Amino acid sequence: MSEILAQLFQGFTVALDPINIFAVIVGGIMGIIVGGLPGLGSVAGVALLLPLTFKMNPTTAVIMLAGIYYGNMFGGSISAILLNIPGDSPAVMTAVDGYQLARQGKAGKALYTAFFASFVGGITGAVILTFLGPALAFVGLRFGPAEFTSLILFALMSVGWLLGEKPAKGIMATGIGLLLSTIGVDMIQGLPRFTFGMLNLTAGVPFIPTVIGIFGFAQVLKLLLAGYEIGQATAVTPRLSIRDSLLSIKEWAEVSFTAVRSSLIGFFVGLLPGSGATMASFMAYIAEMRLNKHPERLGKGALAGVAAPESANNAASMGAFAPLLSLGIPGSGTTALLLGGLMMWGLAPGPLLFREAPEFVWGLMASMYVGDIAVLLLCVLLVPFLAYIPRVPKAILAPTTIALCVLGSFSVNNSIFDIWFMVFMGVVGYFMDRLQFPTPPLVLALVLAPRLQTAFRQALMISPGGSLMIFITKPISLAFLLAAIVMVTLPVLIKKRKDSPSA
Amino acid sequence: MGIIYGFWEETGPASGFTPVVFGLIVTVSSVALFWHSLRSKKDKKQIITKKELLDLFKICLAVCLVIFCIPRLGTFTSLGLLLVVGIKLISSSTWLMATCTGAGITVILYLVFKV
Image 1 (spheres, rainbow over the protein chains, first blue to last red):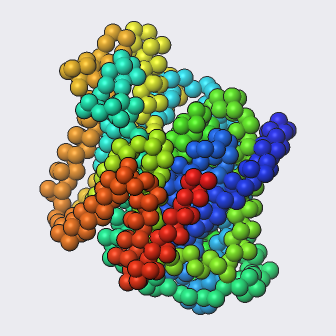
Image 2 (image 1 turned 135 degrees about the vertical axis):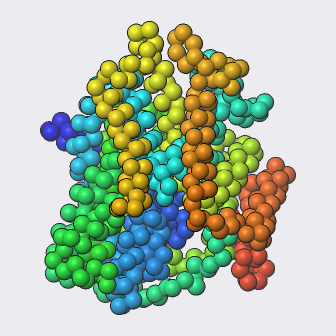
Image 3 (image 1 turned 120 degrees about the vertical axis):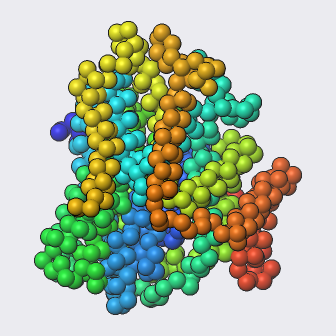
């Protein structure tokens, strides 16, 4: 306990470095803006802004990216409350009560509730992460290659199944991601696979252009082909002032209790691979409907209806960091991007990260506290201007995002091929979206596949006679494999039960 | 791939192992989805309309032109042109307005990415 606090204190010396404070504030502002723009979302935001951080040192870069991530979570509520268009899927539940409040002339109060709840969620999540992260890493140290292989399989299976309407589509997206990861020179025998003689593909699929294409360019295509104008949406146009937005003591009390409760739900839901912030906000809202003293008010403009999903989705975004930092397993599309970024900076998230790069891990954790406070202050002070963010017209948003996609892809290696690849993946991402294939499993598979291959190979090397039995004879590995099998079979059984005539 | 590079060696998986296994995952899920679509009476709507496909083609063509221009005109000049033309075509603003907005955004992008 005291050791953790000492480490966290050391982390604060890193996080409070002026350059890191600057990074978290800039990241937070960018996150709020991107999150507030309907139609982009946190994954697209992080994907588009990832290339900006390449010139920084890894700690500052990740602190800035983390700032973008939770700034996004704060900002997602703005368009949900003012336009009834969630900036991101985790803000869907916020729109239910938030928009009703805005229509009642309480847009400022709804926004302040969302910001306060997001702050509570973020801080609660950061506190739990501070203590749970090292414990999880300690458990992770006992994992060998067999356990890691099974854990990655479990993560891939659960993400594939949990996201998307039809589980088979999730699995297929995972499969496509895994297949894409086989492009390039093979790590085992050094043979080129699926390169078609192209030198640009020998190092594998370019990661940044892939994610910018799938999340960024595909979103622009969706935005341009959807045929609606953001500015003409069902907007409530309030004049927001800090004074009118402040909550009364009674409202504070009501919102605080809900926010803490939902934060706990959100964090633990966020820990599970694939569940993420969206599921956390849904579950917190459902819990609020059951536990609130006045459930009849929910859906009609209750502050608790805004606080519950907002605190849960922020806590979940912190929860997703726990398996990422401790085990190297990202739980969502955004954390998969962060993992990709970390690997590009030469850091290998996993149990050893706490031992090998403590200044990075604890600096990042401390920056979560600093970032949450900074983003809250920014939101509170900038509330009169926030109403303008979702009103950026499509005519400016779409070409600017395309320019960012091109620039982001090109800036990594100064390679024209990377831009072509980004466009190709953007079209793939657009059609995946049209066909209701979830895209996060593809990126997650792309990031995790090299680790899966390495761990699988290492497990077989230490297994007597190269036997596959090593995955079954080790209890932790067997538990993960069984969990993966459950993840695959359970939804099928549930669906069959639902479809059966007797049900 | 499995035949050319080998599937399994004495020491473990060969280079062809993962492409075959991952390919199998995609194949099996494709078959499952195909079977489901045959049985399902829903989801018969068109994936994409002709108009949407044409618009998609236009957007991609515009980006391809930018990619073509980058080695000749430079990154930021090409992106500036894309922004000006894009803003003009999507909105009903004047050329002057579109040029000023596009140039402003290009300067911001330049400052953010280069400085």
